[in-house]
Image 1: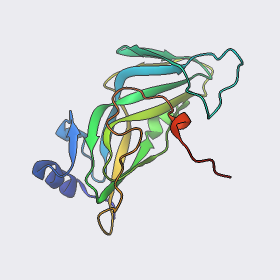
Image 2: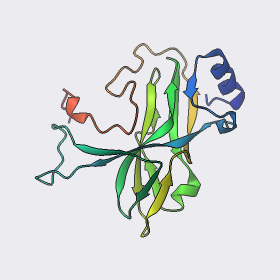
Image 3: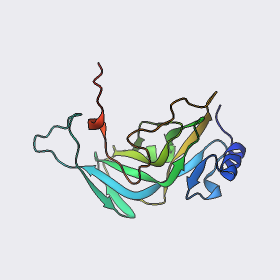
Length: 179
């Protein structure tokens, strides 16, 4: 069940859902607006020109209130907000249609697990022929919350728990190889 603004406000007031910083105007009828933070990470060139899942990927991270995303460029960014979800709540990250119409794709895993704590890393890609200026504090998407039918037996406690800033891939920490 998708949560309404009334339920979101109630959970924020009782502290079972935490979002900081949060302006009450960010809470919409069935979502919470997320704003762009000021940390951006770009994949460093590799000597071989190949990124593997087995090795740590190097990133160049900058802190700036403005970032110019060039055509066909990919950058990791972060939300301004830090989230703490209870063990019976999940969320979906959705980009803004207005930005998609400019050629800015806001991709990510799209799913926030119950029990997650941290800023959300966003994958931004410019498909436009023109550069796009990004500014910290600008609304870039929204979180849609959904209550689970019961509390998770295994709430999130993974490699991105507590992340702050644009956090690069930690796929190299995975021990399992799947087909």
